[in-house]
Length: 299
Length: 221
Image 1: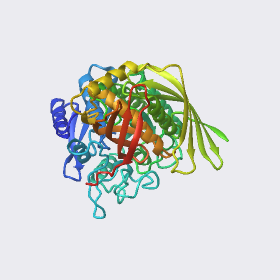
Image 2 (image 1 turned 45 degrees about the horizontal axis):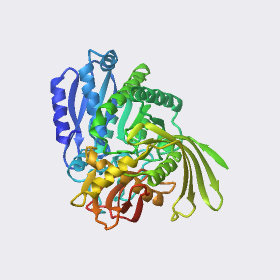
Image 3 (image 1 turned 90 degrees about the vertical axis):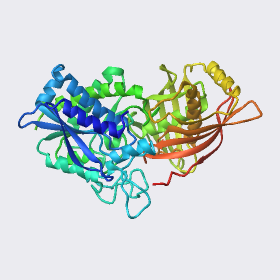
């Protein structure tokens, strides 16, 4: 697992070493003033549609930023060698945000390995932090989220109250015409979820999302037999409002998925480093499948 | 009325996690850990005036030998009163791997230590568990099964997240005693709950939790 400094340095290096494929930008600043780096992957071209993927929403889910790094690494290493990856990078752009909740991630390295939320202070309470995945404007705070600043699922004082979630939302809003799919990577539980989580209502393209999730889960398990469960968030894991996947979907991004990576609780958040590679390899198969589907169903 | 539930969605998975924790409590030891591999079938039934009963068909795996699985049927009854622990009964089909040798090796190793064992952060931040600490972790899995059982409701799903601290307590009898501070992860609220538990064990005897108490969350936040 890489520290935040290692990840930040890596984003600079990978862009510098692969200028034809990768560029780095800053989409905003965290509460504690750290730059939020975004990588754009793809062979430059005109009128390209894009897929947005983020990692590191929840600080303790260390396997998540590791996957974003792995994805970028695989992209640059197999471009020109792997047909599928080459086609994807030629035809689409990928926006990859390796760590959304940078302050929280740093905190899990320096102070509390099990921290989840951001590190923002409020004037109302001694407690710190908002759950970024309850902070989006999607049924905000109606269910499965807490109004108490001391709780782990605190939805925040208002939607997009966190600088980090606002930066993400602003970027997606600004690029809405080109972003055709949204993926957000979490852990743990081995789930592939799609909208909705803020309501039990099913999205209009439920059948399509369900069959994509089914196929992607099969691709994933084909490598090491890792079993994933898939379905709408509310009935699969729990109802929870304010999620980025629901928000992105309601913005019009009709392919919106949340991954909960390994494992199912034996190690939980403290997934052994020996499992980083196999987890990333199998997840990559699922992500490539989804990306390819999106490419064949552009809208 | 009994209702068939999708086995890999909640609420089946919550009842299954509780059942698996209870099995680990009853059958676990330093030489043996059991984890939930899959839920085959789940049926829920409301019982007027009593509570909600789940009938579960589970597959459990041996933590030390992943290819070794057993089928397990379990009944979980959540009482109407949330202050009463759920009733759990289970039957395991087939045989679990014999843990006697592993248990004895651990027992003799601890008995022969000059100073009482002390350790922390198992697994560590990077998920590492040293081979010497694996039995300590399996013992904690079994003991935490008791704590999880006593504190579960239909709205909770607990997992042992980490052993923050463990200290052996010297005894004059043949039992081993350990004072654990563990972190439980509660999935629905996403809270990390520190819990202290005093654990007694001897080979061929069930794990006992003689004392346990929830600890305050680190209010530096």
